[in-house]
Length: 175
Image 1 (cartoon, rainbow, N blue to C red):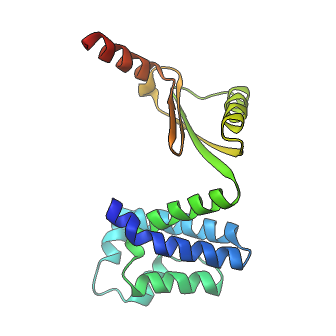
Image 2 (cartoon, rainbow, N blue to C red):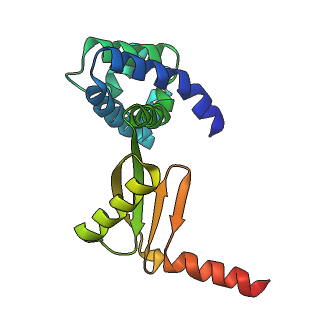
């Protein structure tokens, strides 16, 4: 994983710099997200590794329709260097660079059941106070948490789930 991130980092930085220069970070973000999902598909990943597929065909396979020539050239460069397989990591790093530049904290709230808009607003307000930055929240459901939620905001993870509390209690009792 760390090797993949090492390979992806210069491409993500270059993509972000190009996007910022062209005032098109949203377009780049959408294109990279879609391409990352395409490249992550096991069938596509196998096809991208096929030596009979030309670099140009590979780039065309993952590049979304209607993107700018700059974005299309970026995908061609990735294909020429055999780096289409790291598109998911490139997209993730691009989003980190964008969030940092826009002073936004991206948090993922995973709960045992769907949360109300008020609950999410309270979490967002608390995170905004804690980080002193704007907060964007993605939600997910994981019934194995039993109850409560886990908030993952980059380097900060707050585990308020019943599953986490039970695990901590079990560890305390085992000592």
